[in-house]
Picture 1 (cartoon, rainbow, N blue to C red):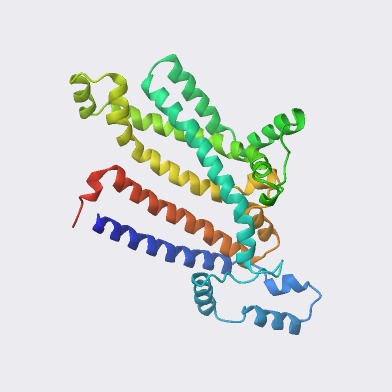
Picture 2 (cartoon, rainbow, N blue to C red):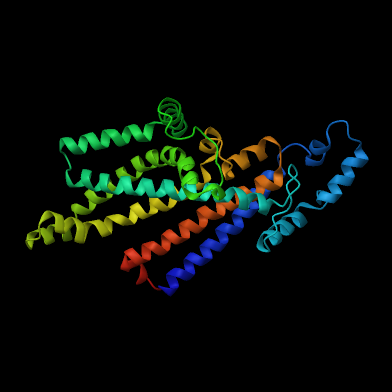
Length: 316
């Protein structure tokens, strides 16, 4: 287990370092001078040069890269060009919207997908299995932004059960915040639930065909006992992978949904920063999202070792 963790930690550190290099390099080649954009086309060259020096843009790229990485390690993400406030403050404010939204969507997706996938696998080849797979195929095919618009039209415009958009803030009460996030969470969760249920079914069907499952049945165990005691745990390995990737996707993929519902989250922040060429915000938010994906993949690998004892025994 120690060797397994050591390898994963090295891979985690190398991947994170490479991600910082790629993100920094990609934003370096973006056309346009941030200082010129901030001051406008009528600004004098002396004013532009002074602002570039103030923002550290006159330094060599390597120096700015290590300054950026060192600042992140120390909790300093720089200042926003547009808002003139620390980027960490902007991220902290928006994270309290995006993170609960992603968590709620993941919980909804899991609660829906696992029973549906298990039901389809246990009834393989029946009409119920066909109906479930057809429904999940429809869920995969429908874009989440179109589904979000449909939810707004039905539940906000027609039935007037929930607000069409906006976020009142958690200081207005937990219930009001959850109500504001209800439709966005459903719009994010259902397409992901369709994917997860199909993965669950496929993994469980494959596991039910293994020799040890047939042996368990030959010993006299009934179908439910074989399913829950023997097959489900081994089938959960690919399911855990998808769940981890889905959480990262839900956190990083809220740009469209947050813009549909006018939610002040990370997705809307990075969208606005891109349109305003606010590079420090784009750089640090993208790095945060990439780091989240990498960390979740690392945690998924640890979950593998906990679920499958064979991984813990693979020592050098």
